[in-house]
Image 1 (cartoon, rainbow, N blue to C red):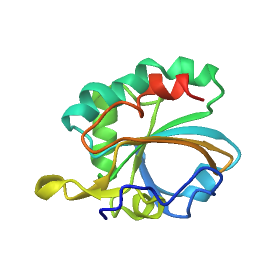
Image 2: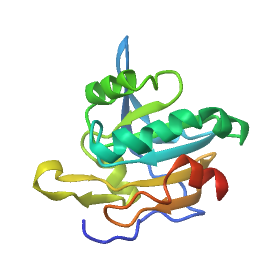
Image 3: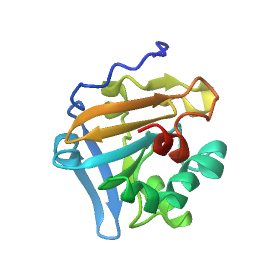
Length: 164
């Protein structure tokens, strides 16, 4: 969990895992192979819902730039965190992200681990996804923007838009 280089690299297929999305109808378990196929997705991962940088900068930047991302050819915008689906939906609703960003829950960090982006974030957060952004085209990773520990520079919506 301390290796800073992700397992996933451009040109590789997104690994198979089960993620969750909560709607007003309940929680749906979704296979990553189904979610990412036949579409272009920008997915940003972060340590946790309701945490400082994630709430003040990361999620709001993708909400504010959603139209620009759609105009750049993205079919979906996704936010991935090692939080339960209830927390992800509550955070999305509080930030008015519903219908704009898919709030992907990875409660057992199965997907984050398979991607190679799981890191130990100290005794409070524990094992969480590290901050990054990815461009996925029909299930294949084309770009990855990994942050250095405690940084917020390359995974912002603005940086992704300027570098794709």
